[in-house]
Image 1 (tube, rainbow over the protein chains, first blue to last red):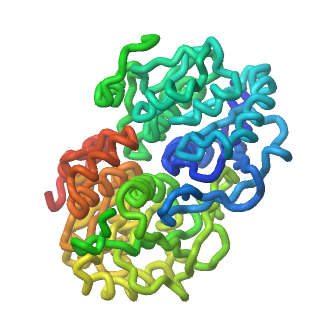
Image 2 (image 1 turned 120 degrees about the vertical axis):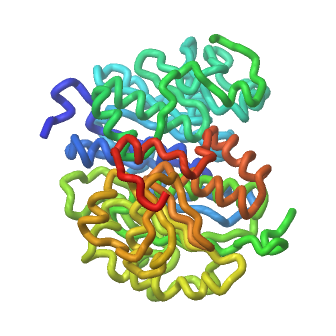
Length: 234
Length: 234
């Protein structure tokens, strides 16, 4: 079986989790990576990085609903995995909480330079995960996108004033940073990432097994239309 | 805020998990239910039912990949939640393992009559989750569907010989049993279920927040075409 390092393909993946993460932001892209590892690259590994080692819930601690799921982290931001190639940052209500996620923002700021100096290093965000990356400063002067339902809230909160936010985009690639639009767009981002990095056949195999018809055109964004967004940076 | 019981809408949801479940089979539908509870029905609750209370991983214990995620159960099949309204059964490699999932099959067989006698009781399956329901006998003489990539394997293993398997279907509804096709089809199934049970406005709100364009026609199944399936029961 091929090894991902043959072509400087990433091996060591990490995902940052925090309370009130959005489930599909995480498990859409991870389902694709699970299949990638299962089918082609068994040596790939995944670190799940939390604030602590306690299970991390999708539940909003400030909300009235107790409906949710908890995921077990493998690492913490204070004792993170070494030699990470790809960091995936999801969104969700928790990513919009300025008090709760400051240590997460600091972690992104600290780790990004080590990803950036690798040929197989990438930062991937889904939904309002790009708000966290923006607050970390790593998107400054770069093109990026985010959740469309919260586009105005992003402006109101002055998130990433130096980021070139692209309003009509299913996902945006700028160098080694890939940012996705809301929730399900993370699946499209990951299928496109796999196509770019691991090849079109592998990406097709995976989206077929997922019985998912990916959006293929990053500029085709029905939700920017639906929410009546202005055309910015596109 | 409205209470789901006003219209005999389900309140008590459960999901059955087993080792090597498919992540997106679980977290596609659950993301929609998380939003349903967050936005409209905070009194909804979710039980995550495992063989034991140990975290349950997507990893295939017989596979060579160590890449995966673990979810924390809240209940076990030997001490399940009382008064369940909806049971959701995902698929994945684990559901295709005849040795490992026999207690899961027995659990479905035992619990289905209590769901079936409720006006707000439903059994929902995604992907090869319907194989487990078929092995439990609860799909006998009913229309149902399943993952398309493993359609032939289902026949070869003689899963549910008395089930009216529908080859061209994104999802199938027969009475209070909803069965979905592979993986991402679970999102379509859940959006359709929410539309039927909670109303079209709620379903639209949720799919828009998920930035997901659901398949609206259950008979439109591009993956049955793609895998060249024969037309059966459709």
